Image 1 (cartoon, rainbow, N blue to C red):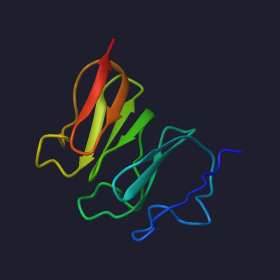
Image 2: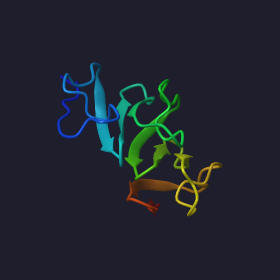
Image 3: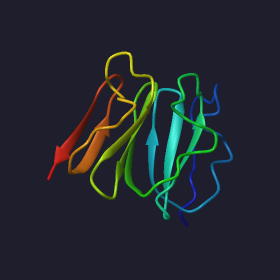
Length: 117
């Protein structure tokens, strides 16, 4: 039905036991935050947000994929470019995003990668 079930440690609201209502097509779990991609291309965010990695209002846009690192988030736009937000002390989430033509993304604790077309 597209809703989200959550379990495990929930000290910062990253895994609410009642889940997250809505209709989603993808999920990503970060260090202490979570993301979900809606059918309309926008992103829902929840959990710890000390580095703006999970803005409570989510992210508007035309996204097709998401990834979550320890304290940052990444998303692939339909046009192939990448948006990043959150902690960037090691260059893992450039605030201007990553230009290019990509088809897939992945995020780890402190780095990200993308597959070029």
